[in-house]
Length: 166
Image (cartoon, rainbow, N blue to C red; front, side, top):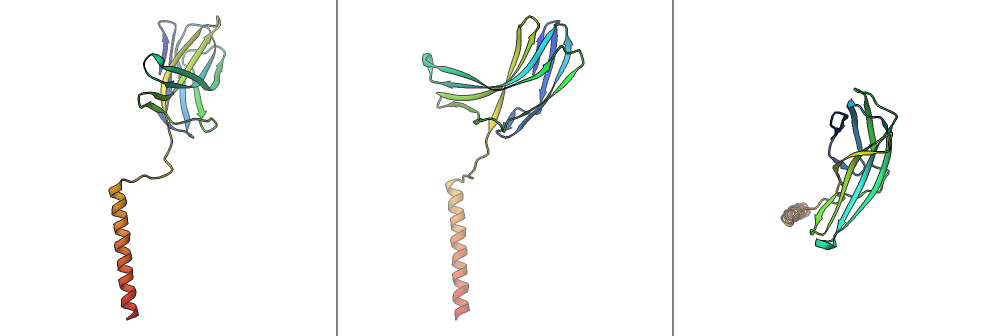
């Protein structure tokens, strides 16, 4: 993710991936390539955006899940700041996109810079959160195949028991 104001500020925000498990850790770095404005502080937010409804009755709800101040004071060109955000401490749900074209839940990493005159500069990047399924779901044909193998195995066992008794 790149944040920039022409001839004043250029920042690169690198993070390790765009899809995270709900108990994962977001690891990244912020690089200052050009700094010509007086930045007071910088923060990273995780924002949850829910959308419900269709057409003119669409409702958008935003909630800030986490807010971390990652820098206080003015950075210099060439400086880098490491980032490590642990997701396990928050009540998160998996990302859901356009369920029945009426509902979605999306998450964003939001990088916010505030200068000495309280102006806010920000850049958002969507991330995907996922949860590992508790139950392995199999198709009906796979279930039928497994049941047939178990049945064949039980017939073989019964035949060997009869031979032993005779």
